Length: 203
Length: 419
Picture 1: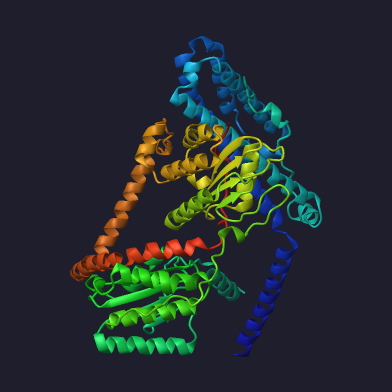
Picture 2: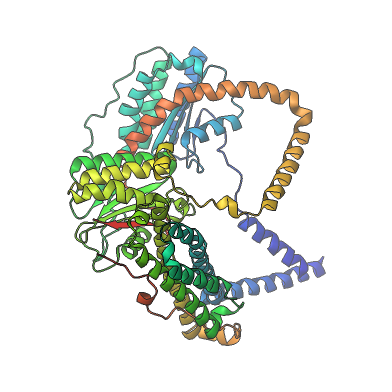
């Protein structure tokens, strides 16, 4: 009986220590780094999602424009090529910590944005195309997707900012140098917005 | 050590396990006051009255107050609750169910009693007894008076005069601000926020009523806003940030819509929450802006344009066929992206589940059949009784409830336009 009680008491002391340690650590923010890293990763996958959605819209768009503006073959081809390049970029698993891979990805997407912008400028000269319901719907979907891309990027930038700051400031810097030695700051979008947005043409 | 760990794990599981099943209050009398609206004296007095009623007329009247409708409509939850309590319809049951949390109340009764409790009577009870008191927060008074009125009617007496002695002044929904203004954004003072002052009062009120009805029906939060200035922001950016600030739509479902008009910059935007992007597509919102709103705005008919825009948004949200024809876009069918083997897998799993259910219920099949027979008349009688009460209770309670966002989010879906 006594032995059992003694063992229970020992177990009780262990549990108390474990609980106190757990609670205090959680309060000190040891969980912030992994939490924020996961948030940033989630926002990044949303960014990728929206870029993919844009890439998916393009074949339909190209077909529709071809129906009305076959002579603009050059511009259409540029769009198709840019899309192929953008979707073929192999993203390494650590793209978020790898500046070169990240830059390559950004560049591929911005080239696609440029090609799309030129295509939309060119379609302004075809009134039949502009009044086609199909084209209008595609254009609105494209605009919507570009907007979603900027919102997703904005969310990602904010999440990465929070994460990078946590890695550098107290008390995060303590946990970063002890428990999370492998965590590096994440890459963020740096190129100015203007170069990404397709040019708006107003007559 | 191992024993302790096992106990700890067990405790954690108990605390962490979410309550997935629908829960019901305990059936411990004729008055189930889960929302604790009545004090002990009132409760026992009401119990006595209900027992007397049953002794005199053999009609069974129950009064239920709900702490929450568990995510269902009060009407549906009430039916589930009575099913759970095993109350088969016997032609003699009436239930008054009040949910103070949502301000809605419902009177459910079996079909044979529809002559005793016609629409005129239930309407009077809602309009005179329940709604004014619920709207002013006097829940116990509402419950007691409505119960008294129903008891009188069931006893064959006439309805008492249940009007409030001095009707409370109608609070303007616009005065209940749930999200304050900042230098950049207006306050969320209701479903129609006319910060730029371009809508007339009649339009504001009619839009507000329709948007409230929409939310009552489907939980979708649509807000119409006009702002004095975008402060140099792009309308897409501004609308998205305003949407997120006001948190339109239910958390998790993200079913909010913001119709924004900036007269100073002559810009319009319909911002759609994540959850509605499939229903209210970019193409649909672009169509609405280009065809319904912009022409009227160009002619300076802001109220007409807004009304027509809201009309079309409601049509799109309800899946109106005629509207879909008008747009006739090559919609991106998300189902086409799912590889076919997933469908086969789902079908197999469902098949296995159904077989398991059928084989488990085989022994009690006889009893089941008779039960399902009675549940048919159950549903039809109580829905016949409560449909009228449903509409009157919701319309009145929404006229002066304060509107607040549900925690929803938007990812930049929707379209913009200018005029």
